[in-house]
Image 1 (tube, rainbow, N blue to C red):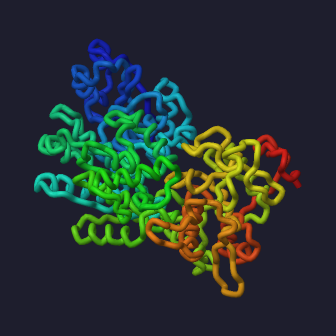
Image 2: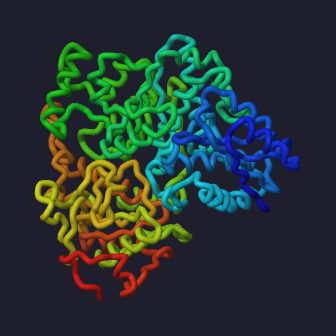
Image 3: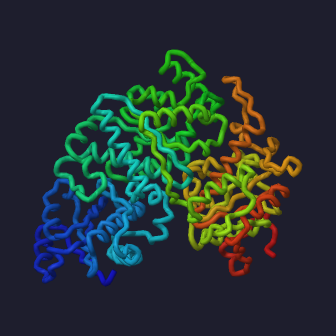
Length: 601
């Protein structure tokens, strides 16, 4: 990218005019990136005439609290590289949390351009220079491992994500202009960015809603056309909610929204909030819609009482056939539902038939979208399908080319896998142990007890049910499906418990009810007269392990409890990516030994 420099100046009329006296034509006719910040807020922009742009910002009411400017000038900057760098810095500032980012979400797309890889390789140098200037407080790895970064509404969209957002917003405005209701469904496998798109869409609509004729939106941005007055008028007094069924993920998104300009954590709601609301919503965006509940025993007595009360309030009677999806449709004029039917993990989740009907309805209305690009797992798009095939018993060996450079390993020693997870957490961050719900949660009531006694190890389930991944001590614990669904890790060490076994006679994977301890996961539905067979629950348990095995961005490690299942799965996961790292005493500090753990060998 050539050399660059950062010019820091006070953000004032006098300082900007003095800056213009510098004998450098690039201040008047050259693409640059700049930042403006005050005590609590920051704005990032790119322009071909930075002096003119700074003069335009000075009188803007929204910029009166800003006091410092930094201009990044590069010898080889061009428009495309500056747009890319602008988006990169916005995303990192959102994750750093020092400032609230003021930028609107007008749609920077992950486009290719000449020498893009060369430019991007130099972006961390720009970050470090700005960090030395005090704009960032955390290091690059620290930011990239934070939920605020991973769930940022400023993410660049891939082409299929951008097309979906464009069609969703355009379709919404068409429905509003025609005074019609609408339901849109977005399908995607694990790692295709459903949650990111849901957050992005919420931010985009809020920015359009709050826009005014003086708002700065780059004409090159993908969604700039939606910032016209006619669209902001359509969204006047428009009530939006982002429904997140999972408690842990919901708390993380609330935190992101509380730190983002134009958003507020009150926008993030539960299905019960929707059902009980006295005020109707114009639009409900539902993340992980497959985790909405049908009528079934809930996790608490309070929720068990709320379900029939909401039904009566909305429908005049306690119709047990009504689901939380029915609440959402009854309480809103428009819905955008993000789904993956193969991530349903409990019988209480929406029935498959209702999901299929919902998808078919959206397809017939031309409001169905598919996200296909894999963002999470570096093993490629075939990995998710392969994992599901293995769990269904349909795959026995990895593809000939394997999944390199993905770090896929099979372990016979759980202690060795745990040590490797702790070592990688120390070096790379976000490495965690995960397991199926194959052990009772004793430590929930008595924190001195252990939950998982295995291979000479004594381990505990997650001590936190909210944002467990980021909680202190989580690297020494084991996360369940209910703490990890919707999250990214760098490395996942997955324990496939004795709830799954391999029947050598039938030559198939079977479910062991006696070793499955999610009470809500195997309870029959007396209200609907449904009894769940072992094969019924097997489908949910397979989904659980498919989710766990697709959390790791850089690698997944596998340990299987049942010996016959271990023999069946070993050739599936032990291949070209197998690269066990031997234990060494130098790693002792990285992996403090539990008093119940077997000695290192």
